[in-house]
Length: 395
Ligand code: KIV
Ligand code: ZN
Image 1: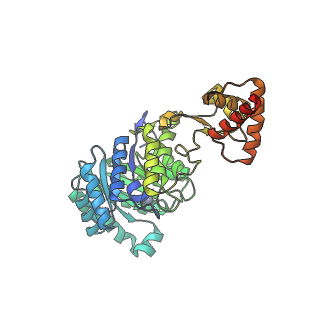
Image 2: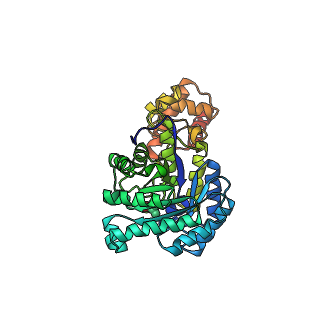
Image 3: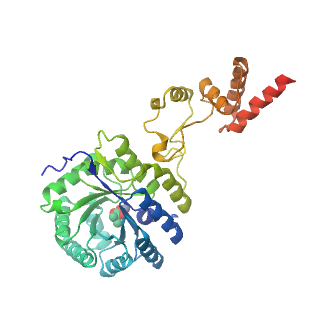
């Protein structure tokens, strides 16, 4: 099997875990009403699988998963569980009314987790893998199994676990980079290795799940897909444990923008990305950093004179995607101390001013003086300095 070969435009499914892994980041708790709003938007946006929560974690989580399951129209709704029977049964109960239910069950497979966290041997863990998947499969036809800390798991053991999970009925196999430790070439090779060595690998869909501890979550995610994974686990705005998860909007736009080298397709309506980002930021009270790729407020803003001049001549000079593709109305040429005459003239025109060359020059000098003193220049500031000058010149 040549695991890296992909037919043109292979479909990758998007598994959003904003409501589960995303909510696990300190301070991001959402109310039931807020979770329903997020779930509705994810479904409308074309997310394939919504991980709605961890039903055993609390009654609130159980109720949220159950309410989302009963309401979502298109997406698969998934509940997370550890390996224990009570966990799995609780997850099964919570997703019972979903149109397309899934149980996601996981156990740690790395030496450090098995020794210190689980205090179990490889053989004991392997037995638990079979039991957890079998139990989940008795409740639902769609079962995902995850090898927690998969990227720090010994390869022979990982392959034995994956083979056993598939044999027991897992339909999706997730190999998470739980601690954000891997790097793109290593993660890609891991999927190639597992898919080559596990004899029944073609019976399951492989999934990537990356954390951002070293800032490589998105790059690792795409590398995993290049290695043969066809499910991507991610969150809106990249929220999640510690440094967060891979950001949905970045992955989807990387695939869309560089489809020449990433020949995959997703079902996401990218025009809804900014709306989704704003909603998640509002309900979690987590601000989106200004320079965040795709959805940060500066993602389509240009301040330097050279860039603004280029943008006024042709937007392709400094933009690799158009703002409307991600639901932003327009590019903004932000007026600041780096802005040039062309952008200033354009701004005045948009504000309704028609100045002579001398007036423009004078206004530009005064604008630069102001910009040296003030971090942010609003339209009102520009209006004020031009109006004042025009009024004085009429005296
Ligand atoms: O990061 C992780 O390993 C997880 C699992 C529960 C899939 O979130
Ligand atoms: Zn995770």
